[in-house]
Image 1: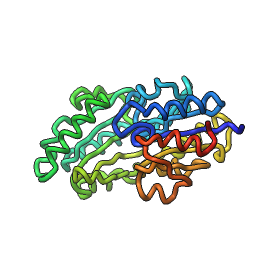
Image 2 (image 1 turned 135 degrees about the vertical axis):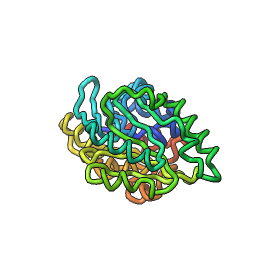
Image 3 (image 1 turned 90 degrees about the horizontal axis):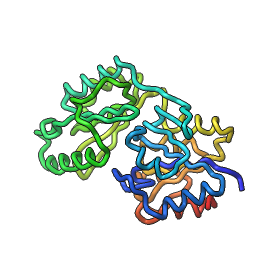
Length: 274
């Protein structure tokens, strides 16, 4: 059997969004695939600290921080934080325009604490959004922004009500950063992240494939949202979860059942990985 490199997004693909616990069937599929000689990597927007509970389940490495930090086992293959100037500019312009911010270093995450203040004029759905954000912060161990200690940051995650709030930061930083914006319809807001144009999940896949000396045709990627786009476009075989983005489904080679419906196991079996 030809050995494959398998890349798994976490939230909405390997686990329900915001969770660290994959369905039992998903981990059974991963272990069986590894026993057959395949390598299974996490490929996620999470930084290493946020993905560590999942990594501890026995993966071979990760494309972390949306590609800004890539490692195989204990070996770091790529490491690209923001510059101090980029971070200062982005944080200032987002703050001045009422955007809620989270910043991610390699081993810690900090978030603004005053979401209610930022969304004071948000109207209907505001209280629900506050509860959702607080729950997410607790699950992912997000520290208060006041405790940020200056260590290198790889990504700024933002939340706001309108796209116009992002324009000043976009004008200043879009030459260096891709503004990946997703609509969170249930909470009437925009949620997204600034991704350095020097990396993405697809380039992370390439780095890992080169490290193992395997062609891209021997790579498989599972994802669910448009922040998986570059991975889906890069891998030899692309799979979107049924709970995923309609746009991503259209360009993927295969659509498998939702994460809670044993979709990952179904996909591994369908592709002959187990």
